[in-house]
Length: 349
Ligand code: GLY
Image 1 (cartoon, protein in one colour):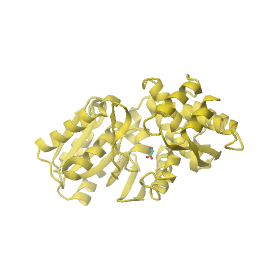
Image 2: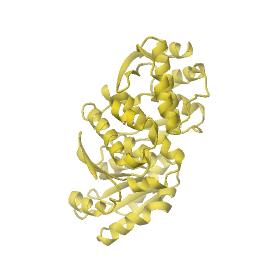
Image 3: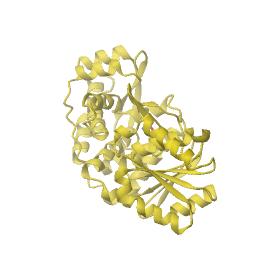
């Protein structure tokens, strides 16, 4: 078992280990006394794992309830968010009670936002059940729902008060969903840790997964603790993501986030070398690491199409963007580009 402490606007522990669900009741009592727990989970995780946490909570006499929503990105919506808020009100949850986000990124983002809105703030614990949420979305406090105009357009920063990551829960992930998380792991290696990159570049990571998750969380912690509100350094975490967002949207979300990030990282490395933003080309190394971890890297869209999407992206239009480029494996930097300049550069590749 490993613990990474995050010191941002809240100070909290991220505890990572195999078969550590039994820590949940003890930690809840320690942090929140006699609080009542509302577990929030999707239909898949509910069927697979909810009975395990329910048992732990019941055995310690912690009062709990569960809110289950249909699995999938469509549920990351204002409708499901308000359904959850109404449920909390109907069930008389109070300011001293706890929301427990038990699932992947959709669950974590939705529940984190609900916790900041309900009664202007109730306690929030994140329990990630996917590799992607373990290394990324459960830590750092970004919460959001999607709007019709795009992904993550309504949200707040709300750091959790505890993250409990039981690696045993990852055993039920399909190879595809596991690979999705590996795209983010490879991203952390490229942006901050050559040893991590070397460790994961040949695949076969499952035996070391606790150590790998902890290292990713440390890297994220180091970034979030100096730029919690995404004004500068935190944008490094977007390596591969500017293009990934365009790829995901262009595919109507048929291409998963992790696959899009893998494609986006390879393209970003290629484009930055071709445009002399970097002095070496790391695209092949990144591509090989992604492929060894079961990630498709060949983007089915021309950069022209991605450029069109990028220019209409609600989050970046009218501004400059910080395009993240790999200086070497283990170090990325942000290059400020005007949106028009960025789109032109994409279109020319
Ligand atoms: N997922 C990127 C971030 O937390 O900033």
